[in-house]
Image 1 (tube, rainbow, N blue to C red):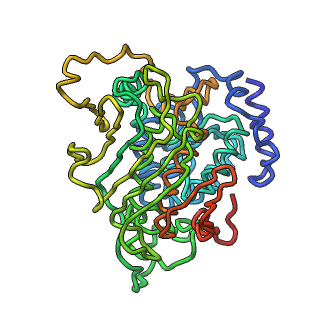
Image 2: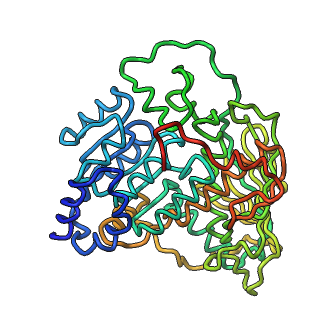
Length: 442
């Protein structure tokens, strides 16, 4: 355990800012030299309620040594559950705790990149809820930072670990429905609409409002923002596409190997400067050159389509049927030249039904997951891979959030992912990144 001890001694002499010089030194591989899979991991939890509680329930078999929340009521409950854990309102203070080896982050989107970057700079493994970041530029920064750090990372797209997605990926890649050049993806929830409240009620005594705002522009407290309706405000979230698309688009992203779209075009209601739309339709076009070489698009003959289009629908823009098939609450419809496959989180169906009535899926080739959180915990201890690491989750988040960039510009944008630039639309630049409030930097 001498390596691990020296790491803690190093961090005890280092501030959050100064620890940047240690980036990449304490990788998951180096930690593996001193930590067995049976030894418990010391985890700090940033966020303690709602989705964070789901993460807590999945990691509580480890050592939760620190908890953080801007709501003292939620924090008090977490402290009761984990009396030995140190409690914080400011995640930056939590990250200075020397014995923390990994952090799980489940807070509003606008905090994701800032908590993640600070943790990676300090050599701590990171589990972060989807979307990985609040902006396209942040997603690129976090993916690059994680790749350099060689730490264990995982984005919270928990459905990725379920059996149904694995079987769908195998079927698509086996060529059962032929060459796929069209995908339709939808999710029914809506986060949007409304204007900024004019009332300025006092901040509740249990709430640390300035810390909740974090890097976001300063504004008066109002209960309309909490606990979850922050998702509909551009300053904090990105509407339904930011909330749900990482879950649903994950499936074609995985099965087809798509990564960086060549163009993005969004349609929806008139753009509101403060709030997200109650529904939108986004068309992504992928060129063969943008397909990740290690993934998908196996159709028996080895051919690849020249283009793949993925169309996202949410809220009021979901049609009742796509290609004659009911949409329901959320899912994907893959369209190939030999058939179609409809899938949601838990089931799939092949069409036309008469053609596939005797169809036998390929033997499973993708191993059963030990669990999305457990996968990350094992990676922290041993250096084993995770399936939604930030090298995968970063491009997925970028693609998803580009839908909002197109929507807010009101234009189809042509995307150069290497330059991270909308080549035909200079107006997109201001929506690709956000300017953090004074005192907040990645």
